[in-house]
Image (cartoon, rainbow, N blue to C red; front, side, top):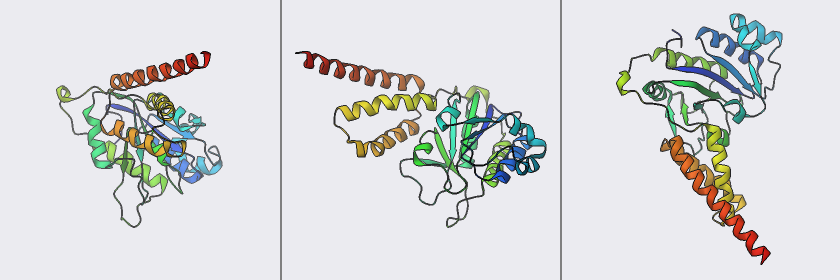
Length: 253
């Protein structure tokens, strides 16, 4: 089983991995399942160390060709669909989560996903709430409720296996075009929204993150299209412009 005959090109993205053995094992898994690319955000270990190379074996090219990023948003800027894994006991209420099984079936409903990214968090604490909200959907792997957290490389292996085995054909006529705004577009749009919320006094600086998180979750749950988000962003941008110019005119008087 591998991901060769799927409707997506898969990028595995590791956020601040600290274990060289995990990194090497994941590179090997990328080779096993024919993953398109391995990306790493701010690695906390030497990904070119002998330990990594020994574990990678035939996956060594994924290490040699691995793209390193300083920020998560940069690593997903070219991705059409971003999924995030979460294995925390205290799951953030701001983020809706689904099962790996449902997510694996859901992505088969699209005609093509040029760049699909799956995010895996730090070995000790996973992804932050802010990072989870950069994904279009968040999913979890079913484990014992008292011990939900998996070893990083084990989690990657389970996800890749589930994606590779779920190859049941979907009638091409029933498949949909992928029309989600990119994570970068969502983040940029919310910069405009945050400005407006602060200007109008709807939120205070210390309550901004909580309010914005709920709004982002709504955007993701409603599967807002690119056009719909562009309309929202355009309206917010125009209001911001009008408020700024009104303030300028008042200061001149």
